[in-house]
Image (cartoon, rainbow, N blue to C red; front, side):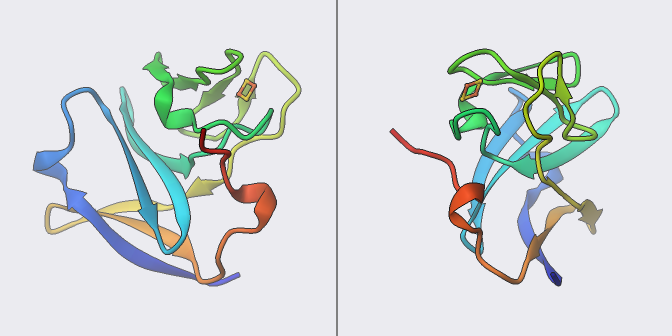
Length: 116
Ligand code: FES
């Protein structure tokens, strides 16, 4: 699957709360700033498809607001449970602009969050 880079927001305008949800080329993306930098993942919990961006970011991990699953933002790995890891999106900062590499193909149904 090929990817294309999409501009998101100037790094200087990244929200102080440390996370940002966006929709890029049909994909729901969660970007979070952790101690080791900015990371982008698919904004969909692999347990029951909740939006992860409604959860909190703590110690480099996002916690799902629905049932509490935790995922490492740097690796996408599920922490302390047996759910699938999150899809990671490559992220770079070019001339101060945060850019995310998004697949050319739209997300399949099992990559989309359930939005209540
Ligand atoms: S939907 Fe995220 S932990 Fe259940």
